[in-house]
Image 1 (tube, rainbow, N blue to C red):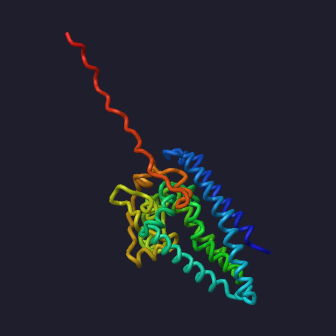
Image 2 (image 1 turned 135 degrees about the vertical axis):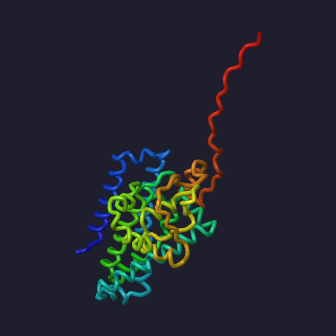
Length: 285
């Protein structure tokens, strides 16, 4: 039985549940532009799930079938306990490198910037992508290769693990701080865990700006935060963030956000500030 449809439906159901929880909990209303956020999410979901996966999967499948036909399913006998951690760690490290490069290389930053322009952090940001960013994500490429070689189950387990953590770290509910406050005796466990796994605390800092606790140019790992610790890009604030997004978020044109570098637009004018009110002058005399 092919596990792919079942895992896909589970991931979709998990996202819809998380999204509905924030929607009916009034969290999405905290965004200055909630409808824009939802439309960006739908665009990213369509280009990621429906288009990028199909195109890359078809291209890699065609190439491998023509160049390495004898290797189809050749690793299907590999033990799950060996294949899963190997795929998971390689995939996570590749994403760490891509994510870090996207913050250090200007041209790549403009492709990734769409994910950071959201002025409120919630689960919809999981699918907030520029069209071309999704074609760079290592999960899509590794998935096509893993399925061809017969490693579908361990790859899906790796993807599911990453996805669950990704939803949890983008959620507007700071469940990590809540648990730490309710269970103070567990603090030593959290001190170790937060240096190994990405938690909302560190990922919220990555999406924030304008305070000493923000860390937009660091905390790049999706799941294995140990990469940030080892490579000196980690910051663990243990606090809530005040401002999310970018200082220029309100000035970014939607078309450039979704389609750069094909569409390039200048920054929109700065939002007008309300004029100061002054007391009316008294008539002379």
